[in-house]
Amino acid sequence: TVDYGQRRGFVFASRWIPNKGIRVLLEAYARADIDRNIWPLTLMGDGPLKKEVMTLIQNKNLPQVEITGFISNQERNRRISSAKWMVTPPQTNEDLGLTVIEARNVKVPCIITRDGGLPEAAGKLALACDPGDARGLKNLLEQAARMPESEYRQLAEQSHQELQRYLKPLSLYSKAYQKTIQSHTLSHTGVN
Image (cartoon, rainbow, N blue to C red; front, side, top):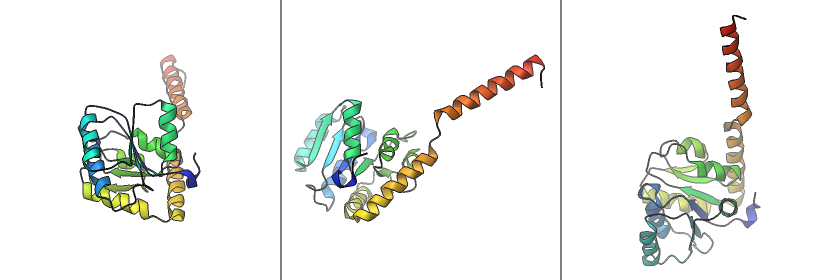
């Protein structure tokens, strides 16, 4: 986990396809009343919208947006843990949202849209707006940027603790499976 004092900005990690919310994120980021030098945006990933994304960044004059393209898992994890906030704004009825779980696991809180299973994966402390709502997302970026450092740290810690209670160790499933097999075997051999 990166020390809170060394974290900067927002991070987005996804394939650049229409329903993942990258357009809405760029619109919200461009309109947000924040100091973009203090709150840079890192876009990780790549995809069919690359040319459009590059044009949007240029047209909206957003030199604070960093594009990484596809990067190693190690570099991806380093960048997530170095950000203050993970931003995940899809409108695609996400099943779960693995990136928000990864972020919370390194104490990086999340800004999300209420999309599919994302609210559950991001936890009760995530900042959330409706899918496709650029204005709502802009407001959340501003809220995150204005949050006092002590409140941010408390939220990050609590979000991490909530995740630890939510996740179940894989051994739980193995034990349940073994118990089921044992029970099934006993019932077929006539032993009670």
